[in-house]
Length: 480
Image 1 (cartoon, rainbow, N blue to C red):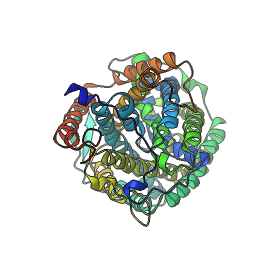
Image 2 (tube, helix red, strand yellow; image 1 turned 135 degrees about the horizontal axis):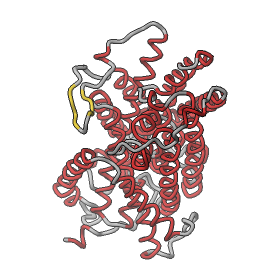
Image 3 (spheres, one colour; image 1 turned 180 degrees about the horizontal axis):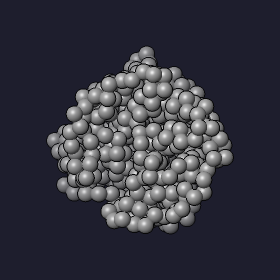
Image 4 (tube, rainbow, N blue to C red; image 1 turned 90 degrees about the horizontal axis):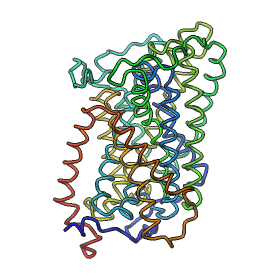
């Protein structure tokens, strides 16, 4: 029994024509990089930076971003090596299947369902903040009951708010779901355009805002600790775990492996280059935001607008920020809706999910059924749950996946040392162990409520695996 649960998959052909219509290979290195930037630059800059600074790290949120970037960097190097070995769309699920075995692969894949679905929901919830701010700027006011979640996360507990649901978040998710349904070429092209817009916006805000930075707002740089992850070094670590949510996008690039023209070359380039660009932009934006206003006032649904609005000289920038932020956040949702259906598709083709999840549309060449399911679930989560809870849960799933990938590189170096690797992790023992250690350090900085939900989610996942996945796995039942 244990041997079966630890069975590893060794055949990872990227030829999916045996499963019906194949995915369309249209993405080059810059398309992959744009996907990575599209997924990374979003809520991390436009929302989570403010919350992490106000509630946890203060101006030292810059250190939080550096810690999260280092942790992500270790993992990104490991993803880059795996991407050259296993050029299919399963991402860390497939990587775990090759190195840690079937049960671990299911656990990682099941957490990725939460990772991508919940992260897109969190971004959609934050999109609403900028959308309503734009409407308010134009003199249009939506009822609060239709722009706020009916649940809030306060004092470690979910409480009712009396609101109905987050209607704008549902609308943007369903619109982008339709776009992802009709094709990767259309959705990736729009994503590239949105990436150019939001990177340009960030550069404008940094350059314009730098002139009005008050260095006194950076003192004390590390506010005195108040316990329970509020300020001090514990707050910096809690902030790092929160802003880590901002970095998960580079992983989403690996889910587009079967739509890459040359995945062995393009994926490592896209993964690493997008991470470097995004880290520089995050640090610059965080420094400007905490310098424009005291960090304590940044805990809003639109902290960039809050910081800009505090300076009448920057009033011209507010409309640009609101529109640019909406475009930037939309690109994150778009990439997550692209990524999640492809994970379902690979799991179904391994027999771990019903065959219907492995279907590709004969005309659009997209996993259309999975896309509709993903979009619907994301819209429901965004309609009901608050941003802070969604962001923390996303970080947990991502950290678990990253640690598994870092460990997997070491295992495959030992079990299959002769595999051709067009990219190799430098200082492999240090990099992989540091990746695992940093992921666990951030994991254990999160509170008990997130662990409790992760436990319930894991039990549900294992129930599905033992009732269906284990019985239908093609690895052990090739003829099924």
